[in-house]
Image (cartoon, rainbow, N blue to C red; front, top):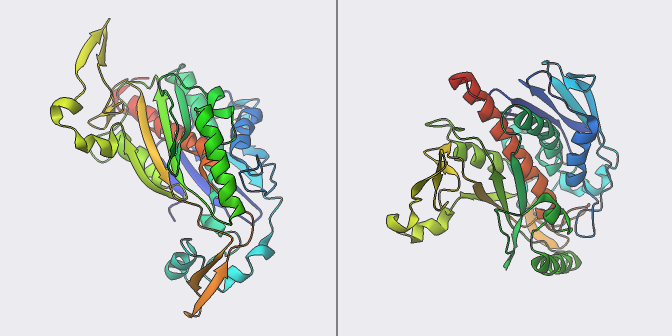
Length: 363
């Protein structure tokens, strides 16, 4: 059913937006990793709805319940189950969607594939599913820092909202910088403009998209598997598995196509006993394997599909009709997507670190 991700550090998410709850089962986590409910909750609080005036007003505490796999504050090697119960579901807001497909949502395609769907809040296709990913990543990050790289940093931030672009130094931006504003960018001046635009979109019953940039610092060298499991390929799959994503690029990305090989190549140099590159257009990955430089990539998110204005659509009876969005939705998904991008990065890195150790005995 496509709900499992990873090979050695494997997660399986479950639940629907307006069902009893959502969560995750984690298999393959090493034993004796210290983890607390508070650490998981910290990451979930960055993702939860109702955070600010530019996010959905749905009020969910998103309290994590660890049901198994952790004893006296440490993982014990068995599957870890985490549940978050839905408290503020309002399925009545979606009654019209039972008979009408929302434009650019998964309503029609789910019906076409399965012959049945949960129309309340989008069911399984809702971004609420990502709660399980964020909870699992809180543990993945502890595995990474405890066993592979204690100075590893994963920092994502909003890079653009439509045509407003933030100026952010990926080498030095911190989590505190990103969390200092409600749009979650590292550029205070751009943040004000972005927030104003998102407010305008919400007031107009509309939505807006943009991009998130992520930097991974102090990543171990050697992560990634030729040929089909290249590190950037798994990062791309991870990011494009997120709701509302439409594009992925790493390093120079599409802009690199405008350069020649002479201009684009990253010359090697020695720094003490370490091999370094003089530039980083490769984005920290060469031949599908991490080279020790900062891994930098960007993810494109489309405007939120649900808007509060009338749109043409069709009914489940295959008749032309019209639908005006209802319910509670983010006018821009980017601020809440920042911790989810970080989470998927951690899951990919943790899985590859365990695979590297299993194959090469390192880490």
